[in-house]
Amino acid sequence: MPGQYARLRDDRGLMPGAVDELLRYIPVMNGVVVLQAVKDFELHGQRIHTGDAVLPVLAAANRDERVFTDAERLDLCRTDNPHLTFGRGAHNCIGAHLARAQMTVCLEALLDRFPALHLPHGHFPTWDDESPSKSPLTLPVGW
Ligand code: HEM
Image 1 (cartoon, protein in one colour):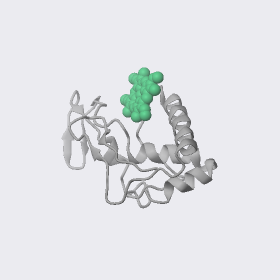
Image 2: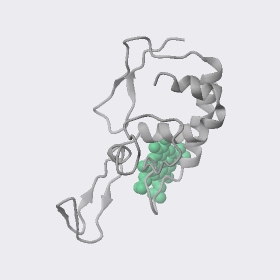
Image 3: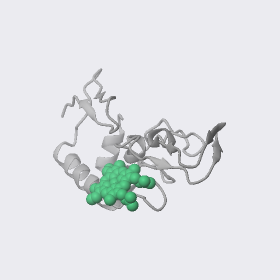
Image 4: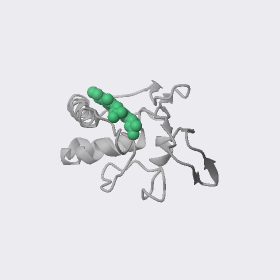
């Protein structure tokens, strides 16, 4: 995200929106919420029966072009951001506010301590694709 780090470093007022955009873009947890259908219905041509387990892919929902303008782009200034990273409805994540506060504290410290943090040219993170949680296996950085 060239430029976006510097933008956040120089304008901390962007922080609340930036935290939610980061949560949208890389939702951390994926495929760990299993829902159970309480009635028969059809979804995209697929018949779901009462009692069926449904595994929503939150990361895909968060990149839905019908909901998010330019969904594939990380935009720390995005304002309308109804992402599903913390779920939705009665069992919406009870720790969402704590998670946001922790991310804010960590990002503030990182921006203060490493103002020029960047991915070295030609280097990219590698991701753990085996796990339902989205986490980097390697994260090369320069500062
Ligand atoms: C970035 C960090 C986090 C993410 C991405 C996350 C994500 C989620 C998701 C997707 C759900 C399921 C929502 C649903 O079923 O609709 C959930 C539920 C839950 N989360 Fe989190 N969570 C995070 C941090 C936390 C923290 C810090 C706590 C507690 C301190 C927490 C406690 C819970 C609990 C207790 C539930 C179950 C709520 C219920 O079933 O009513 N989470 N979380």
